[in-house]
Length: 232
Image 1 (tube, one colour):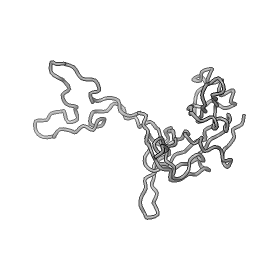
Image 2: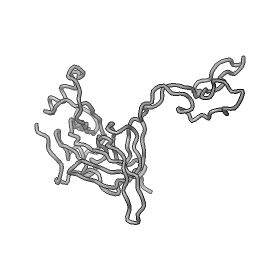
Image 3: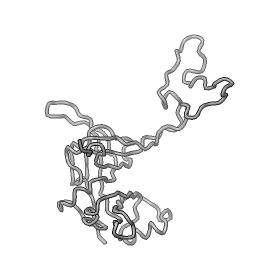
Image 4: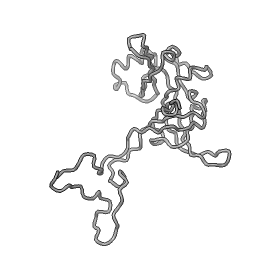
């Protein structure tokens, strides 16, 4: 089955609930009054529909499964997952995500349909989910914003230490969740209500105002804002 592009076909805009993308990097643009606006450039899609689930069928609920191209070794694909791609007539993809939709949306799509940056519009509010940069094993100053002691006379080799941890003899232990040195970064973070500044469908580019978690080139998930869509 060949992939079908949605460009210029006016597909159901309700399917713009979320798409895969990659963070290209940050830059700046200037407003009409000369104000400087920090923005992040995202490459959104193309995301083919790998599977369509219907409440009327055996699945029991309405959803679509979107894929995003990426390198994935054949040995890392199990048989059920390989069967889904084979049935859809698509090459195995490294990234899959299921998205709940309405019954009308399920009827409007089919396997192989490709969703692109056209799903988003200028002025729309979106949430971007990404993984923060990994910083390895760090101390309490970098990890928890602790302050260094004064580097005055009498201070020896404890300039970046966490300080005392003990609680004397009662209870005589370190309490859980104590802020200490350890692994820092690689956390799943959602930045909410970022405004869409520009959309370039031909280049699959979406420019949002503000910063997005993760290094340049990292995978992100862009979806319509949860708080911005609530009725006032």
